[in-house]
Amino acid sequence: MASRSVQLVLHYDGAGFSGWQRQPGERTVQGILETAVSRLCGEALTVVGAGRTDAGVHARGQAAGVRVPEKWSASALRRSMNAILPDDVWIAAAFEMRDEFHPRYSAVSRSYSYFVGTDDLASSPFRRTHELVWRKPLAFDRLAAAAGAVRGRRCFRAFAVKGTAPEKDDHRCTVSNSAWREREGGLVFEITADRFLHHMVRFLVGTMLEIGEGRREVSVMKELLEQEDNSQVSQPAPPHALFLERVEYPKDLYLRSE
Image (cartoon, rainbow, N blue to C red; front, side, top):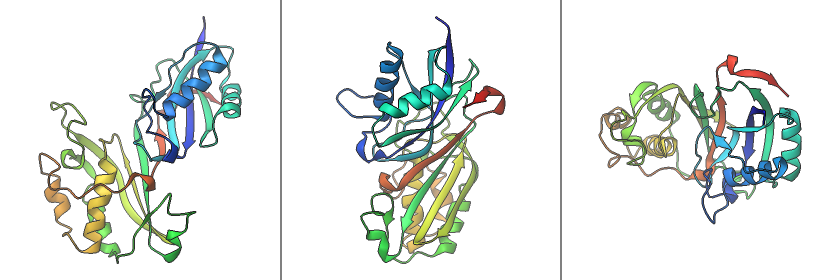
């Protein structure tokens, strides 16, 4: 049967999921999507994500790919899936892709944001579920310097869960953007790289917050990048304030958008 490759751009609230990856007996984003698309197409289909977000992590631009019968246009698939998906998942866009498209291996970059609330309203139930409430003073110049230290192509073995990649892997990532910015009510850390290791962003944020608070020196970032394990890194920041913002692909992989 003829089929077409479709990219789905996803928004989801990670609070109600045990992460992205399908797991027996657990509610996962991949599992919810596969149930919906398989129901519509009348056959068991696999939805492949650009990356695996942890339990509690949100997305405003997760990319996923699925191959569906040719009768399904990207726009029709988006409308039909949104009609049956639960309220905490939404397909923001759908694109018809070339056959060689792969959600994970074709990606050229991924971008994450981590939100820190520093004002009194950060404790509101409307914010504390998606921001890290932080009551201690933070020196913005120290945060900025720490973020700048991770730009470029570097080994992030010290900022990853052990075993996140094969030992023969060099654990190197090319970080094109790493910066803190001020926003109303707090701060946000933004990072873009060609790949991310397990817990990498959360380890970075946890360490930078201790630097911003003055508990660790700015120089520790460069020192940690030379370590062979994560034994000296700070505790990872909680997952609930982390968002996968977007995944980018080469333009020539797109056939048309709907």
